[in-house]
Image 1: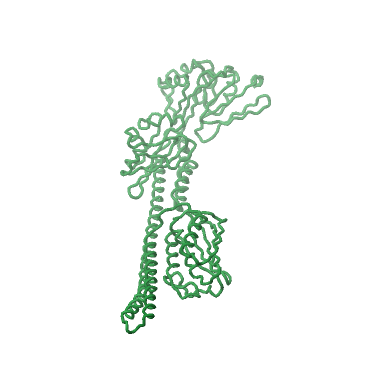
Image 2: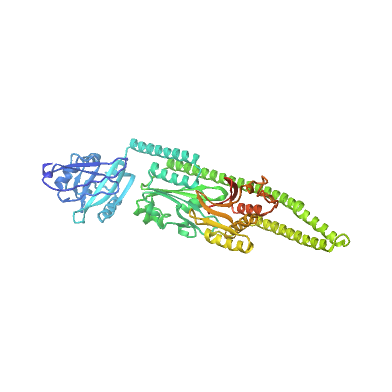
Length: 591
């Protein structure tokens, strides 16, 4: 090593990783420790590689089987492991031609060497290599060029790893153990899953993290009535995720229809491509896959409810990765995922059915209540006024019973009864209309602007009565809802409040907004005297119930306002504050 220390250099040897370990090369150079981690994707020997003395000294003790040749296929250096593997320990091979050492090497191997001397990199796992026509080896191998400091190719490096039966079984058992761990982890997750999107995202991550794959993506297959015939990645995860940039499978494309994804979707059976580089059905995506070092794929169909199909696609950087045993485990994983998705879908459909049933029952109760309310109006308000009207008419017709002054008074009463009857009919009609309509138009509504419109209308309705309306919308200034309904709520509620004021003094009313986590409240406070605050009846939201103690009038306004608020998904509360205020709270959902 003394000769090596006289030179300043940097050397990196990167070896293939077939046994889940990293090979390390540690060189002491002028007292400095150089340690480079081995990476299975890059093989680089650089800086003064023309000097074979130090290369030979460094390589000979590396714990892996490597030989290095120049452009003429003459051996520059080799590891002791390589010499031992091919029974060449007693022969001085440095400077000898590689093809003289192996005169019976197949032409197929020589063609591989030629391509690599031109810049290609080729590798294969579990290949059969026959040496001198008698020695047969199962090997993992890789051939790639090495470059001089000026970037020119100086030759090739050949790596080979003999696979004995024990190693093969050990590797197979390791893979199956890893796949079983993946299956257990996925099943544990999908058993407790409550959200389909999160479940699929979690499964994709675990397939990559535990299974040791490079990429996984999930997508739905369009049904026959869907004009869009593309299968696109909905969920994706992995180190080669950019392979899916602008990626889609077009089921109207004859070439795409022959690919593994479309075949799996059509035949409802898993499709495996174990050597992407030579696969005819993978031709449209082959170049992109090789750029991202993807060498094998399995497409697993998932049979869902109502004839729907989804596809789970898993990619590996290893050729022949998907063995028969591994495919069986991944098929089980796909079946478990589909079962869980179907269970979540059934739970969702059951929930929707239950909500529809609850809504139907609620609607029936509302209709029954409306019928009761209508009966109440007819029996108490309409019938009584009609009877009074008929009695007044009879009295008017009996001229002898009434004086002229009394007849004029009765005519005036008939007019008043008719107006009240007309008011009842209008109120009832308004209530029936609001119960038939749902939210028609959602838009952003400013509280300040809306209240200004309401006040303008109130001034027209009550030209004589005085009232003062104060507002505080600092908490929230607007809401997204139906403008007409909110206008009608405020108008009718304020109209009812002002109408109850029998005093000559100006009535004080305040409106304040409040923002809650998922709702908005408007607090409308009527500042009245304490003796007017007591509720005359408990069921104040029922039709023609009295709210204020001081008046004997019943009406439909509060019932009407409550019906509108419920129609847009809100609630109405009424409470007393202290001894002077009554507060109406309108609670509306945030859209």
